[in-house]
Image (cartoon, rainbow, N blue to C red):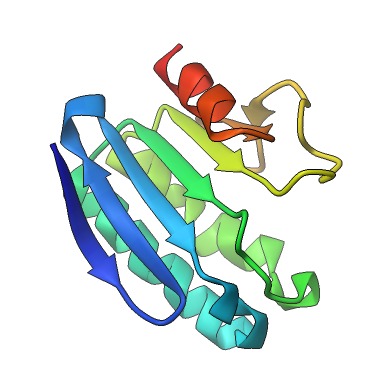
Length: 132
């Protein structure tokens, strides 16, 4: 069963309970997203992960357009990753636009994450790894 659990101008979030999966899809409106808005969006998503308690996470970044300079890795490591860990995330996958250098790297834990993160060029390959 699939249920949309959140939507705003930046993203939509789906709980796919039968697949033990929560999915975030970014919109191209993220091109105008500030660093503070990005942190707020990550916090909102972390709240959905905590409520749904799915072990698999899929981030569809194919339409994500925010300037990478607005990302704050140390803030994410301190404020978001511990929430994913506590919610029981076991695998985290990004479906990325073609040409991104991380695609195909061996999934591995990042920072304080207790779960591996993988980067994939197709939705099918991301879902296949998540089911793994």
